[in-house]
Structure formats: C-alpha cells, structure tokens
Length: 170
Image 1 (tube, rainbow, N blue to C red):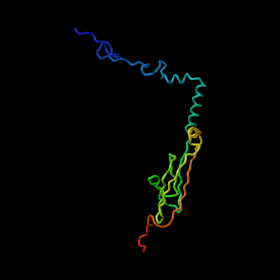
Image 2 (image 1 turned 60 degrees about the horizontal axis):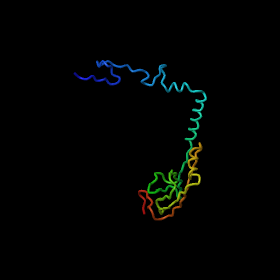
Image 3 (image 1 turned 180 degrees about the vertical axis):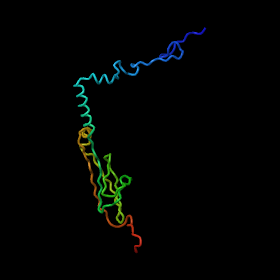
Image 4 (image 1 turned 180 degrees about the horizontal axis):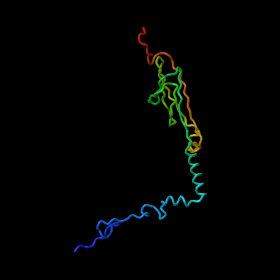
C-alpha cells in the first residue's frame, strides 16, 4: 500500500480538482470592503492630515532650489566658432554654455580671416559653493546663477581664410 501524502496548502483534501475560494483578506481587503491603506488614511486625525500637507509643502520648497552655472563667451568680431575642452559648440559667439565642474578649461575661438585664439581659463569655485554651504543653496527656493563671462578680441590675418563669393576675381 502507498503512504498518504498531504495535499499542498490551498488544495482541497479531496484532490478531485475542487477549487478553493480566495478570501478578501488574502488580498489586503478588510471585512468592510476597504483596503488596509484606505482604512489607515480614514482613521487619521485632522492634525495628522495637516502635518502631511505641511510636510509636502516643505519638501516641494526644498526641492525647488537650484544653482545654474554657465559660461558666456563673446568675441570681437562676433560670429566666431568656439571649442571648449575639445568639444565644438554648435552656436557661434556670443554664446552661453552650461558647465558642471569648476576647473581649468581650454577655450579655442576661430573666425574666418582672423588668427585663432586659444586660452586656458581657470573657473574658480565661489565661496558659497564650498562644503557645507553648497547644500544650503540647493535647499532654498530661490534660483542662484553663477555666470562667468569671457570676452576675446581676435587679430586680423592668418588662420582660416575668408570664404569668397562665386564669381569674385582675385
């Protein structure tokens, strides 16, 4: 004779394919028909509701602050191509370009008919962005702007030859 084996949990002992009926409590629903979370929310006092609203407002204000860091590059004459640390910018001067890191940057400026100019520019960290003050500015609901402006005057001659119009005689 074979030994009797107990059926797995949830399977009737008859083993004849009889289905078990799931109870509402198996799905987190109480006898009143509401979810457990809905019952917790309904049981809150008015003071707890105000605390949640106040906490939400404080969190929104805390997450709304920001610091914008950008380079503004101007040239005389305007319309020069700019390369920063080997990356060409798509717009000609005057151009505004965001930056993330305070460091030394290599800025190269080229314009047809002018000598190319290359400069090493050190972007120093401002006092208000040094730890632990740097975190404070991101918590305030006021945007801060760190804008560094560089102006370059290009010298005529050499460099990239100017483009000539078709049909022009030398």
